[in-house]
Image (cartoon, rainbow, N blue to C red):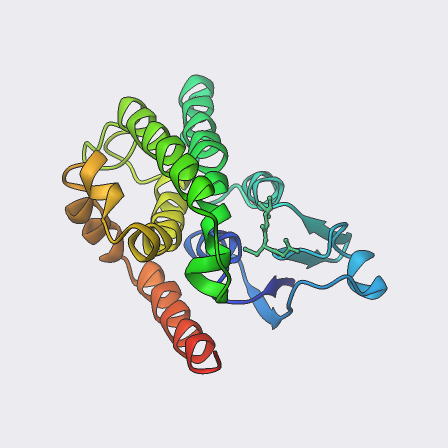
Length: 216
Ligand SMILES: N[C@@H](CCC(=O)N[C@@H](CS)C(=O)NCC(=O)O)C(=O)O
């Protein structure tokens, strides 16, 4: 049995949780917070979450975990069968995470953790996120899913990441930058949210966010 470590606010945690649910892989969740404790560093090299615990050992980095789950549990694939289409899926995922999520992440300190981000950083992040979103629109088809008529891994993580960085962008800039660059994104998100497993992850995230902001 796989144990998924992390907490339900984290987008990278929710990425793996949704993949596990959609692939029907049995797993249990363990509430684990990032830390620099030696015991945790042995399981996740930078003390980050998520990581999974398997019979063979621990594995961190959500994309490596996703690739592992696809290979070890091929019954319900989340990537297309064709090698080029698979690569397009990974291209979109990498674009979304490297060129949008990781940039927007620089705002999370202010958006979620009560810190302050400088005006200079806010300006730079806005420009780079807008460039990233414009690039996403060039890669994605929205027909109706990101890369065609079948739902794929890219859709599950796009839904997770849009939720988190969308919230941060809205809080910091008071503007829905995702809709500005990707018209029709709300009906796309509603389509993904019609799936029961997505609703489960959304409900768990909402509960965790409520508890988190109450504790602030
Ligand atoms: N590249 C990593 C990113 C994971 C990540 O950033 N996790 C955050 C929570 S969303 C974390 O553990 N942060 C604590 C830290 O940076 O020390 C992945 O894809 O799993």
